Image (cartoon, rainbow, N blue to C red; front, side):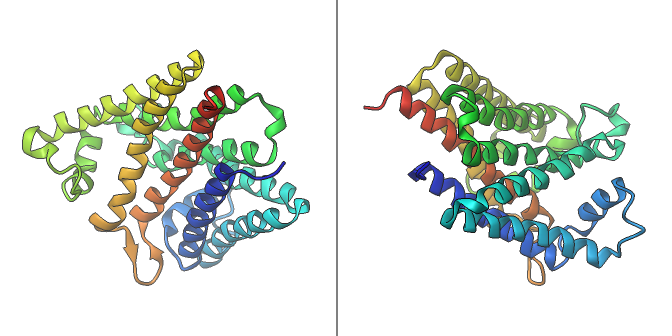
Length: 279
């Protein structure tokens, strides 16, 4: 299948995000996160911590290489597909660990460090869209790419109603040119509640629009969802802890850059709306 403009946009978002993640991990960023994954698979005591970072970073960069090569030769589409799936599944399985949940608040579904892990669901949907498009109808593909978007917006949006999350986003919201005004008008908790309501509303609106096959509603709700993920990218410049001179991305940067994957998911959904109303 000949790549479209949407495909090239998605390839670009993947290449940029995975490259930044790979290089940062290669230079030692997110050591604790990488160690937690190796520890889950009982490899932390077998493989030195420095090697763990190298292996993690190398996996991301190898995936980037396969994606780039797949644009030149169809032979590399299979390795690119498998790499994206493996890159997503390995961390996702660690959600079975209790360490991913807020045990002091009852554990599952109160998510802690797993907030960054559930984002990997986006890669699975994108891999299928790019390399196995014949598996699903256009609407089926839209639903598949809706899943990670709705999962993150509803789940993490729901956590915004808890005090720990409301306090946790203060360094991000308070330094944002676009969002700091919330603390002028509302309390920390109320501002967090409003953000959570926004996230959940647009996720549900997008789901309903896709089910009803309403192009305008899909565009509007997808735009509302994309605003969330594009807004988080501004935190790379406004909040502390996004960059590190020695590792490129720091902990916040590693968390935020993954939101580019959801922008890619939303491009797939917007393409579905375009097919519904080609004019």
